[in-house]
Length: 255
Image (spheres, rainbow, N blue to C red):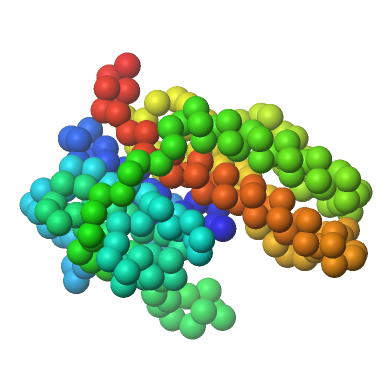
């Protein structure tokens, strides 16, 4: 799982723009900051700035981040071909307001030889969705699920003695300090959404480290148990991302 979903910043700042809290230039700047570099990003067949304007003219009022995985597709809007594209990408945005609703599915375009550090840009395809899926868990529920997953993962890794082989992994789990989140959330998000996003980003980094090898797990049963507990943590992180990015409330921009 990436440190932050590619479409997250577009939801977090796109929602603020659709509510009139920021300008379109702010959205474009934040997307470029999150993605790195200055490669052009596109939405539909247009540059991102024009594609966003087309979404507003189509009646867009809100964007919802969804992070599906095989076996957990309740957040997908349908139809089946849109769901499959979103599953392949690992993420999508549901655009609420147009009839029918729209789905934005990202893909990465590399400019220049990748071995030479070629720039990456994101192309969001605009697809007709079948429905507006139910909202994700609320912030409190997602935070509780994440806390439970952290306790279970910590206990399992200590029991498997992975702590001695990967002390930095255990340190990430036990660190209760909340770092500042990345640029994903614009004005209009409550403080607990920012805090939840920061936790999710920190734990996504942990999952990236854990995916490098099997840690101190030796036997097949130990590897399987480690995989199961990390899968549970990954699911909690995904739901935390979805809840944080969906917690937009313009009233918080004036508090």
